[in-house]
Amino acid sequence: MKTKRLVLLFVAAILVLVPGCDLEKKQLEEVAKDWCMTIRASQVMPIYPLSEDVQPGDVFLVKTPLSEQVKQWGEKGYIPLDLSIARLQGLNYKEYYKEAYWKGEYADTAHCRPQFRDKKARKEGDDKSVEAPVKSKKDGGGQDSPQQVEAPRAAFPGYSFRVKQGQSMALALPIEGIPFSLSLMNASDVQGSVSLLDARTYGMDANELLKKLNIWWSVNADKSLKGIAGQMDQPVYLRVVTRVFYAHQLKVELFRTKGFGAGLEGGKETPDNTIFELAMADPNSLTKTSFDATKTNYDKLLKTLSDQLGGGLIPGGSAKFVQASQRSVGMVQSFDEPLVIGYRGFDVKIFENGELSAPIPTYALLSEGALNDASFAKPLGWIEDEYSAPYFQWLKIEGNYPKMSKWLKTKGYDVTPGDLYNSGKERILKEADEEFHFMELNKSAK
Image 1 (tube, rainbow, N blue to C red):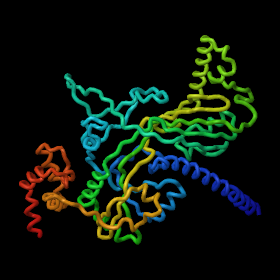
Image 2 (spheres, rainbow, N blue to C red; image 1 turned 180 degrees about the vertical axis):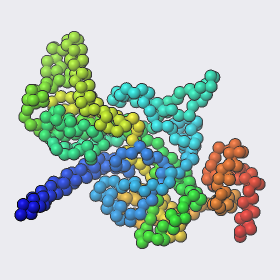
Image 3 (spheres, rainbow, N blue to C red; image 1 turned 120 degrees about the horizontal axis):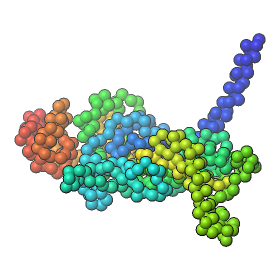
């Protein structure tokens, strides 16, 4: 009888907790959606959660029907990138940017990720402390001379939210310290805003990526992958990233709307001690001496609060308070490495015969109701020069790609085998044909 009573109590407890869990899950999903909708407002595909390991040339296999993707896009606000199958190599950023932004010294790779020059926390808005250990010229002593390279800037709108005591906001937003801030202000209800600081972007020509995608698909992709469309009872797509947007810092501002009535530290009221508040209350009271003393005490308070928050809470980053009073709190969260917050790209459909369609921008595909699976009408056709078609057929034969790569390196050509396809570099292809005779092989095959 006692055991039966315990079982009933256990079941009753579960029934009470389940609605609460569902409510919290719904709240977290709503916050995540609001965050992603802010990124989407800039016509950017949001990444949730934030990730360091996404870059132009990444290829993802998408097996979810387009109609279901559109539904998920509307309900959750983002589409997960969960099945990475390739990372296209040899992207020519030098050719893409030319003299428009970077100088032409970075032909094979993107700029290295911007790094902090020292381990000290960056000041808010201080982007001069960013440098990148990129390829650099040798100086007279044979040492690498340091260079600074920063990606082009990007700007995003701020994001507003509301949070109450007890909500697990740290799980929904890529921000730490909100529960601590609620306690600091003795608040039961706050309005908040998030701003992306030092946001930047870099990308690659979609046509160049499409060309490399088709070469990779024909030469390097696994046979089972090419046949996947014929095995599925629904369409299958490839999603290719062409541009990424990332941020170094997030600024969070919280404003108390409701409190519990008592101040901090066991009921003892803490002053609204920002320098601006003191100056507005009594402008004549702030002499230089009192101003310096107030500023020193205020800076100590912010440091103490930042230490209590603990930078170790955030993997690969740190957080600090930049403003605090009874009514509001401001924090800046910095990341050691920039985190990608969104991307742009295109989708292609895999036909049952293994061919790829013409591309459609991913954002337009999911956002415009007029587009559907029928929009991927035909396989992509290429207008090829005299050498490209025979060369491409020869290149697809097993073992020829590394053979060609070795030959190019021996000859001193700074290109990959795939870069020669439809590139206008007929002189190199003609020289390669003298070595490998792919034009004759093509004629005999006919």
